[in-house]
Amino acid sequence: MSVVYAGSAGVYAIDMRTGSPIWHVNSNRAVTTGPVVAPSGAIFAGADSTYGITADGQVHWTDSSLKPGEAGLTVLGYDGMFEAATDDMGAVLTGDGSYVWTARSFGKITTAASSPSGMLYVGTSTGRIFAVR
Image (cartoon, rainbow, N blue to C red; front, side, top):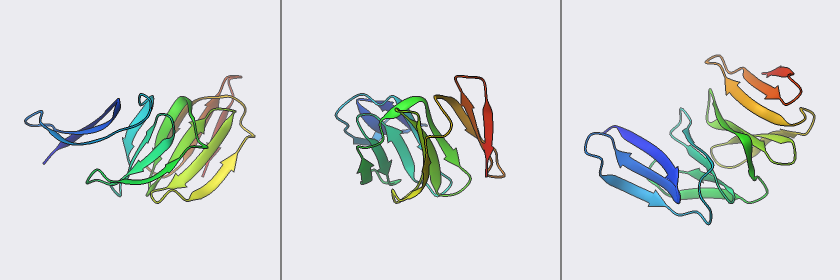
């Protein structure tokens, strides 16, 4: 089954072929970043908190200390994601919600992307681009 994930008043999994909902996870506010899906199947979304959701629609973890910033979420080439959170913080988390690292050294993060090789690119409001492996 092909699935489309959408964020609105929570995260929705929708059967791409029929348009029928498969599951829905509520959030206290509208989803503003994501959802994004890691190669492992872990689903991440940002609203009032950052959510880690399993492929079958179960909330695996939430982290209310990470409020989504304007650059959103970026899936990394393993079971993880980079979040450009408010307060100029960047964080890498795994599918189980564990922190790999956090940093405030980038400045205001405006964009982020990853390459298939696992390189993370972080762009800032001052026009600087960081490459992090």
